[in-house]
Amino acid sequence: MKIEFKKVPTTKKELETSFNSVKIEGTFCRISSSLVKIEANLKGIIDIDCSRCGSSEPFSLDEQLKLLLSDGVYKGDDEEFLVIEIENSLIDFDEIIESELNSIKSDYHICKNCLEDNQLFEKEF
Image (cartoon, rainbow, N blue to C red; front, side, top):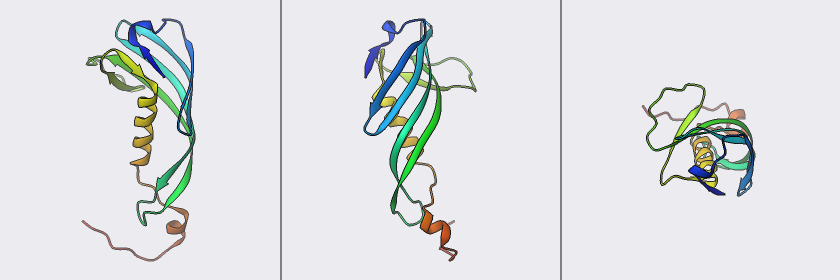
């Protein structure tokens, strides 16, 4: 789902869209001429690779998202919200979901088999 930055209303609007098997549900609204606030939940199931053995296993998502979308370079300091700078004044919710999924996948995950395996493994320093 895509929407032009200038068409985002100043009153909260319901947001519900999905990308592959992941769904984002919540609200979004424009809070200034160059900022849009999104408060939503990211839900679904994705496959994540184990950082130790490389096997893939399903991972259940239920993440709360607090995002500020900036039309251009963001010149502020906000610790409560994650800031995403938007290009071309076009908000692409599929791209936002995909970015969040890639961020989750890049974390360090250990599968159930590796958690139960107490053998030492080689570490690189």
